[in-house]
Length: 295
Length: 241
Image (cartoon, rainbow over all chains, first blue to last red):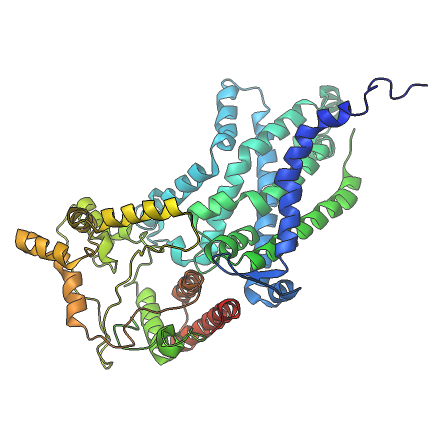
């Protein structure tokens, strides 16, 4: 009868909701609306003049070879980070799910990469591969006689940034996979072994499908990470170089917006990136989720 | 390099007569410089150490024997190197007229439209920076030019340069050049964006491993010039000619 009797005061729910609404408005809605608005202008570097240019920023964006290249690069980067990251982390998680002495020590080793800030992770990797003083460069030279320099080898730079990005997400992915693995009922695995399934078969027929909700969740999180959160790593490690080789969309946006101070153009990029990732996420929910098995 | 060899970097006399609308670095001279660098990189003579001050590490660690760097880095390089450092003039390509090196480095700008108290503070700050002892100390610890003639005179009288001849090189470089319109600093709209484009072009060029060096250099520079001209065009559309 009295469905709303729990909150007789009609104002109270809104008051209780207001803190989160304020946070969402200040950090999400207002900036989004503002960048959509600004994407229709050309703004001077000092911010004192602006011209309304309509869709010119967008037209220019898609006519710019640099942007299209950056888009392709981002897709390669994101695919690599997600695929390598998820498959490698799943293997690591399965290995970490065994009963071995001192397992908690091994687990900690794999998980703590997530606790390192992007700036420090970037510095560590950049130091390891520093062409003049990096220990990895030195080792490679000792072993193969070749001196590698990622500062004038774009492909190598991209590969190193991908590895660093995967490494940075290791802890996060492994924790979720471990939790997923531990939620798998042992009876199922036992039943499979009684039916004569070997270890590999058990993994692909039982474990893998039962992990699919975790994989799906991690797919979305890793994709968002590869699109947006790698900024810190790239800024510290390569600054998008050498010669734009590691300039993914989010870094190009930063460069155009905050180095070149072309706010209108950068806003247009952020709008496109926003739409792009939204569409990608919706598509994944539509099509990938059908394959997810919730037990 | 352009200023040193009396070549314009952009039109309208480097953007000083009117706002620049076209860069010239993709012309004969720029292509020559880029081709030379690609050759050096291919022969393993040139090691690229990264932008701005990142290249210092290769020199300090002894990986390379020579380094082109701003005079403002002299202090920190001398402090870190565990060997004796010598300095000299910028390299010249024969067959071009003599220009001069550009006095670049960090500049301080005061924007209009701030509250009065801010200008008071700025004025105090500028007075501080221009003080004789502050200017001399800054020169001694970094290698930056001191800001006034009297500061320089003080350094001379003190015997600073006879004890530290490396700190004199930049002065002699400037004094031995010829001042022309070409060797005055470039005045470009949104130079920061343009510099980034040129740096990226340079990094692209260094990755080239094939034999068509000059053609590649020209293509990379043309592409960079196109982007820079667009940046200049945008700037003119905002601020007028």
